[in-house]
Image 1 (cartoon, one colour):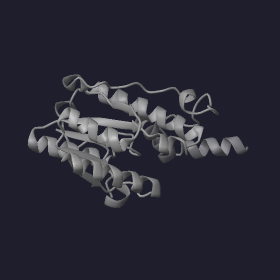
Image 2: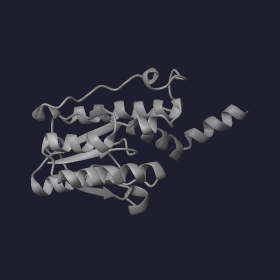
Image 3: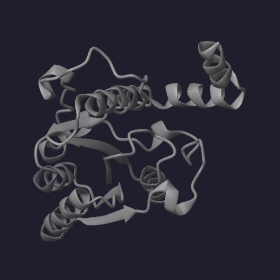
Image 4: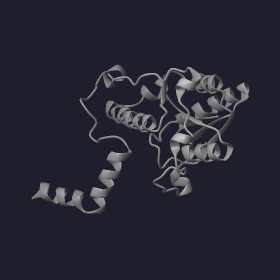
Length: 205
């Protein structure tokens, strides 16, 4: 059993750590459970637009997991405690995440690694796709649902996503961009076929 801890990579693909977890699950005939922790140490430094986009991405990511028979476990608090506690609750042999190189993230990750080591839980920090050149648009298993675990099997609460106004006093009505993989691919196609540039030219004329 593996726990995938989502952080910046709030998408199923490209996501090197999730790909690593899926590959191991396929090899070992095990399962993967996804987790995201709403970390106040990070939220307190983020502006409302960034938090709005994060929440939109989390909603899209949760929908993807639910479409594949699982769910994204949402917890709110200190990941130093919550990541290890969740791993122990589900009996995970390993926690997998994408490495992050900001100063805040490095300090957080050191604390999480120490907590996991004390709990006897293995962990793997996978370099992000910028470092590895990963560009695959598909999860490297034919049927993700076959390797995703349901939180119901462990009697673990999936948690709820807060509203933007719960996290930010200066909340906006919406983020300037629609979050999620599908929306991002739509924007990429628009740029590739020139639609985006034509719109810019039209707005200037």
